[in-house]
Amino acid sequence: MSLSVAASTQALSAEQVFTLLERVRQKTPRVHAITNAVAQSFTANVLLALGAVPSMTIAREEVAAFAGGADALLVNLGTLDEERRAAIPLAIEAARTAGRPVCVDPVFVNRSPVRCAYARELLGLKPDLVRLNPEELTALLPERADADALIEAGTVFAVTGPEDRVESCGEDFLLRNGDPLMSRVTATGCAGGAVLAAFLSIEKDRALAAACGLSVFNIAGEIAASRSGGPGSLVPELLDALYCLTDRDIGARLKTG
Image 1 (cartoon, one colour):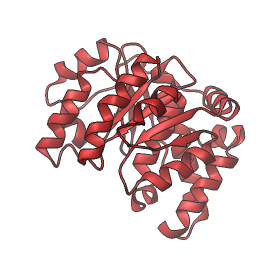
Image 2 (cartoon, rainbow, N blue to C red):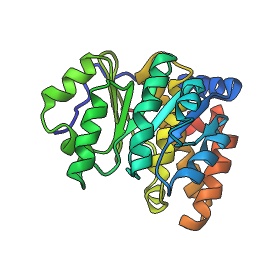
Image 3 (spheres, rainbow, N blue to C red):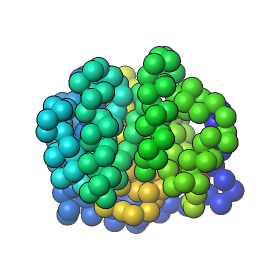
C-alpha cells in the first residue's frame, strides 16, 4: 500500500520553511528521543545543531518525567529491547497528559512481524506523526482504508524516499530535496525523525511542520553532500549545514511538488 498525495497538494514556500526553522532556533524545544542505540549520539548532535535540545533516557523510573517535561516525544523502534518496550508506553502517556506531540518512527517493521505488531499497537494510540518509508508503510498498513482512518483521526504521515510525501486530513505536500549520500550514513533517517519532532513542537499544523522539518533536514543534507568527499565527512558537514542554514539556502534549493 502506498499513500498518494491528493490533488490539493500545497506549494510549500521557502519563507514558510525558514520561519519555522527560526522558531525552533528561538524557542530551543526539548525533544525526548527514545531511539535506537546506534542513533542516539548522532540524533542528539543533530538536534543541537538544529537549535533544539535532546534528552534520551529510557530508564523506566524516570522516562515519564523526562517525556512529560519535554516539548515533543520521538519514539523510534530501531532497537526494540525490553527496556525500551517498558519505557515507550510510559513516555507516550506522559507526553499525552502534558499535551505534547508524539512522533513515531516504526523502523524496519517490514523485517520483523513482532515489531510490526507492536507498531500497530502504537498506532492505536493515534500519534501526531508517523514517519516511515514505503516498505515500512506497506508492512504496517497493507490496506489503504487503515491509513485513511488514522489520517481522518488526525495522524499525519510522512513517507520518505526519493520523494517525500506528507499526507494529512487537511493539506498534503510533495517534496523532492535530499541527496543519495545521506543513505550511506547510519542513523540519518532516525535523526531526521527527531528533527520532525522538534518542528511539531513549535507548529500546530502538523502537516506543515512535517513538510518544513523534512525540507530543512534534506536541504542541509544536500549542502553537506556537496561539500563532503564521502560518508565520513558527511556527518560533520551535515551538522554544520543545519547550524548555518539560511533563508537564502532554502530559497535556492527548496524543491516541492
